[in-house]
Image (cartoon, rainbow, N blue to C red; front, top):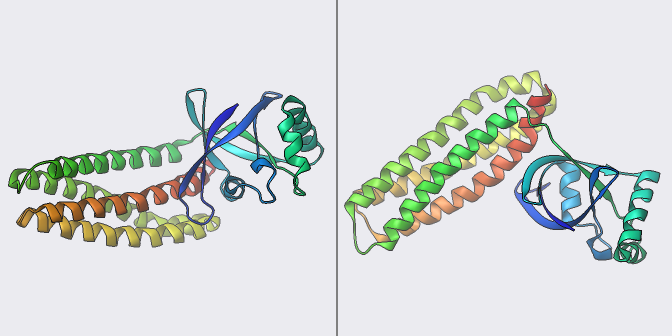
Length: 253
């Protein structure tokens, strides 16, 4: 049986989704870092060791979960049961010197802080998606279209303003959070640096859309599309890292 597992890159902070085999044993959902018996463990294991908050999609359901690596005799027992069920897992362990990790995925109780972050981020995603759709509609047209260009200008400025306001509010509270929760300082420092990067991309996007509004051209619209795509990629990594680190810590507090 297979499920989709989304982890947060230990270095990149970006969401990574992989398909992994799972089993339900003793009322627990388990995944096995077999990597088909290769010498190296799969990247997703390294990621969840750094960021245990993951997302699981199985049997049409999608939910956040906490990953917990099982060790010792309990790990050996569970892996043995799986190997009896599926002989391939016995072969995987025989083919490698490393102890194949067994990981339990327990549904997470998402608190108010994480839920609020997800809601804000989803709202910004929707605004960005609407802006990208407006750009694509403009590019699908023929020749300059001042009315469409003005519409693009409104979409982009609305999104850019919302994004700037959100990050400005966060920058205003991060220093106090770092003072109250010293363990969060490394994550807050990283998020602050990413805010600076996103602000530069946001400024570049604003410049491009102003040029498009002043003298609409397909070239400017294509440049705007590229700017939005670049910003979207940066934001997805930022959102994932923030939801994995800041939200759960504040929920626990």
